[in-house]
Length: 546
Image 1 (tube, helix red, strand yellow):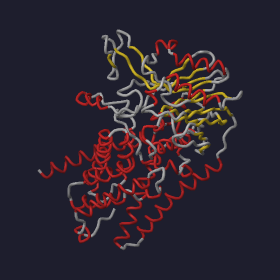
Image 2: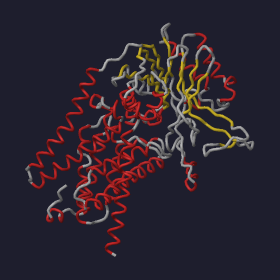
Image 3: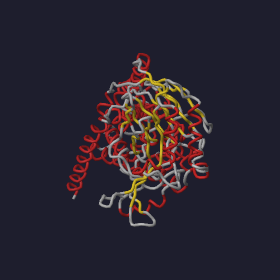
Image 4: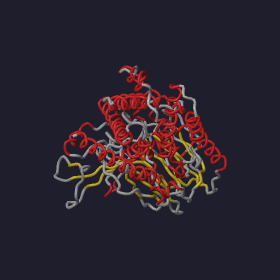
């Protein structure tokens, strides 16, 4: 990559670098779904690239802080709605997530300088960033809401090829186009319209247009195999802060059941209720004695009235540890006896056989259901955000559980935040799921972009896995999504609703389902190699100077 002329470099004062960093953050936020102008993401990193080029060429410091400013602006403007739940938690989320991203960008900056004297090496960012996004999906402070590939959730006809790459393919696409855009703008500023400029423009146009064109071709030619089952989805619109605690659990359950009864027919196979529908703050729902729960007894009575249906329903449950059982950081102590128990965010499947299948949420919401377990950070658990259900660190499932109904239809019950994770969802499909049920409760964020962004992530999962999805949200947005990502019967915010539709079961596996986030594994290998080489290169240079 060509550098600027010295006189141009000298005009790049601190305030200009600040403005460029702010511009990157604003462009990223403005591109974000669900109402953003998506094409802006293809140039959003360009201003920050200019900052990096200037600092690298001038051998100046400050790259971390300029990057942190850009990513902080992006985080605040895109996920400001976290503030509705907690002011302290929101500040921590904004600051820490921006810090993590800035650290990755800073490491890219250092490697580019050490390996290529800042003249080349833009591809290093591709490998570092994808590796970071993958890592960020698989540790205790996971917050993958802003993975770059998620930006296309509102433009699903552009990314039908996610069935091959997953959302990380979108991240790769975004960064590569930004690199080409940076080259084009650099040549324009230098008024260099020669061969290299024409190649950069051609590369940018081709790499932007071809994936979209191919995606539209895939969308137009995709045909679902007809294998329909009728599903009823319930949206009770229960206030997670007030009604959940001020009303009898049985009264709230009846609210759900009365809605479901309006749409159940003789053909109905599944009835899906949202996350934490079953919550008993007095007795609790104990998994070693489910038969004693009045809520589950009432559900079984409802099934007896409609013996052909299978229920999938969210619940807050507990399990007492056995005396010799090893405890994890999620273990909680009884207040009256020296015994421990686990709390779970759970999905039940129930049918006329009285057999109850259980799946525990595996991908926990940071700051709500999962707090750091590392020594000095353990006390932070006391700051767990209360979002109208079980809070503090929950126990997870080691592997996701797949439900199987009486006719051997296998389904994946994805609980709330799990729908953000492509590889996790793909694992449930590899285990045999032919349908996906997303059960969630997004009511705590209010009527903000938060619940609308969360809904769009389910569209990505439908495309990656080519599975039909029935989504049951406590309040907006419940819907059906077909295997191309088309949305049907989308419900409104803060209204009770019940919808019914036939959706197709699919047993074919996409390339992405078979191989998971292989792009991340390749990137991690190359990132580690580049990082080691740059470290050794820097060490050798310092030794030579000495």
